[in-house]
Length: 343
View 1 (cartoon, helix red, strand yellow):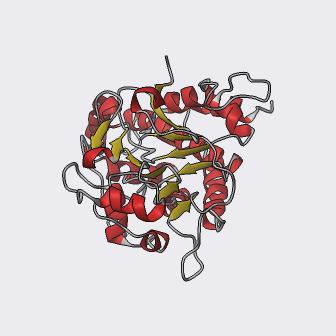
View 2: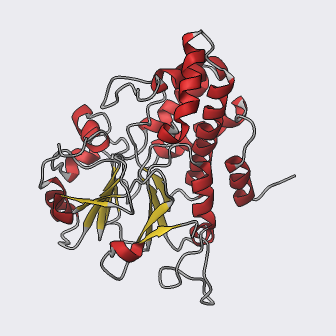
């Protein structure tokens, strides 16, 4: 039976089995190839003619469109499914006959853009008990035990949903590199091995190596290393984490292997960033004093947390299903424009 893309995405969100080797390899290969060749007007290439680290929709001549920002997903397939089926406010985007549209419908009509701030794998606090169970298996030499299979089923299904959307809507759906985009559990180019409740980074690496093999590992790593680092729009900037210092446009474009830059856009702890990094970058990249810098990475309670005098807004609440709407015709209002997709 041939499924529509939306039906296929929904089936991934409710998957009862891990993705097959061939499907995961082919999809990751297709998506990484797309990203490696994403030399477009909105993704300027580097001085050496390679893909750059910046999505620049400030300089892109196309008319500004409404924007949806998705926070850290952390294997929450259900959250992404709810986002795709969420009916957007009519004053944000609507059909030609004035009817409300789902986000997926609006994407399909090329009416908006979507940016995910990354962090696709690792269920974190939601899966703490499962991680601890998987850790006991791991210590006993069982790399692909039941608990770990359950974790990876969610994480890889979410990854597949993201890659399918990028392949289907390459100029409208974008994913930024987060600190969890490190399938090899590597320590290089701004990446660091990840360890919180268990030994998550190493456990994922070993699972992928044993269950799928090096070919799948390598192609997913290529996907991760091809993700942009920052997105710029006339009314906002977005990166995974709060910028540790003010980075220039040129450095971000040429920064795909810049360890300090990648670390400074994906790993920044609270209260360690330069207190004017966002204001400086907003001024250089947008020229709009009302623009806001958005990121995820560090958890918040409620809808968001304001930093750097309100110029930086954190939007990652792991217990809720919030998305952020950026209207093209008015200043961002956190009380109205951060929306719960399940209400």
